[in-house]
Image 1 (spheres, one colour):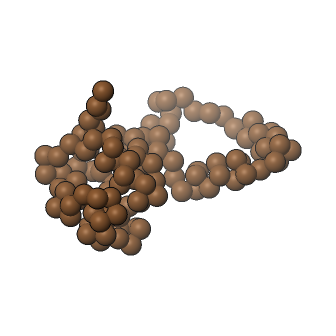
Image 2 (tube, helix red, strand yellow):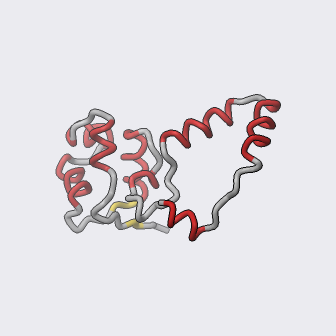
Length: 119
């Protein structure tokens, strides 16, 4: 089964590519697609991006395929700060994890409506 994802004009490929210090040509060479294809992805020239290509592009940009989507299409995308916290939690020993859980326990988790209003 093939899944095809249509990326909307506000996709993040261009900003992630620039943050990585790559040109369109660099990204094209690293992913095995053409530079015009990368340009079409960034400029939304009526293009659908399949999941295999999303994975290739994401791998080179050091992110997840979901990170390529706009905030509108992926409202639960993690920030760099959140990723860092998760990475530290994963590296922590059992005792440290328990301490982190105790610190986080009193925090109130907002419901879906409250999360969207805060964003």
